[in-house]
Amino acid sequence: MNRLLFVLCTSALLLAACKRPTDAPVPAAPAPAAPVAVAPAAPNADASTPATSTMPTLQVTTLDGKPYDLADHRGHWVVVNFWATWCGPCLKEMPDLSALDAMREHIDVIGLAYEDIQPAELKAFLQKHPVVYPIAIVDVYEPPKDFATPRGLPTTYLIAPDGKLAKHFLGPITAADIDAAIAAAGGPQAG
Image (tube, rainbow, N blue to C red; front, side):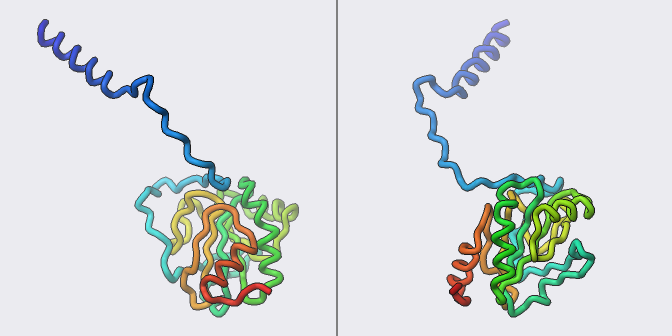
């Protein structure tokens, strides 16, 4: 009986020690960041997912059935944008990325639809939200190996003309953000 009483008293003390005192200050919540839609993580993804390669490769088939190879775009700045149809911030940045691709000869954009969607469904979506750059659907369970598994959408990578990673963005971006990153990396400034 004494042993049981000892165990119960010890347990009660340990539980009481784990509780925050009622007069203890509550930590302030961090300031809200830019909205980022959370992408579904691949089942085998974890915190140890490797970072993006410093010189990533990317070979996909675009929605129109054409092969896309990142290496074929050497000599240009390439914007690799992971997005999804359900992602509000992604949809907001699409017109800006499309204009950037259309108006800057030294910049190419590719959109990687990071969701489980059928090509016909995505084509119908793009009829309502047209862009001038190519779009490819990537497998959320097996995303491109040289890019980190997106932890949120949109996620964008800027690849320099030499094929090296110049900048990684998490959250929505604008053409001005891309132009500034290119200028900071020593590329041409927008005029």
